[in-house]
Image (cartoon, rainbow, N blue to C red; front, side, top):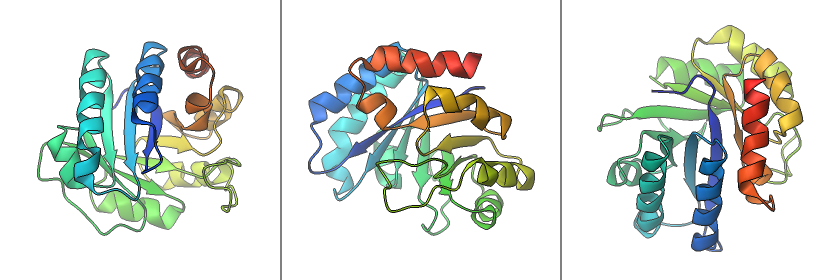
Length: 202
């Protein structure tokens, strides 16, 4: 079940990732109020990310938080994740296990298509300038407002979200926010997560 105010940490897992550091960040962020972790695997086969996924599954269960896996359905099933999350361009997919389906979208057309294909929630962005997508022009909250008018699904804002921008995202129709560098680059991920949680609760 999707939280009323999702606060998602997106953990990128690539061949260069320090797994121990990533798990430390996740644990501290959960302590600060994160209620959703997304394991986003890039340039690795799913089997090599299995240990990371299982560790995150233990952490999220202990914290009563959700776990989603992007983009491998098999890895999501192996980890007993709560959701499998797909990029916008991925083909339609229906989970075989009892888990949710999420999709990243960058347009109203993609959002309506994802809704018709059975998605349970959408990540909408990129809303603000962000280091994780430096080559992508930010869409701004106008995209969020347009998607909110077009679909009935829970929307999670993503892309350059800071605690100061949370209120604007909520006003534009988001249920919550997803964060990468705002947590992973923080000196104290717990305090950083608390700042986001306070902004979501305010």
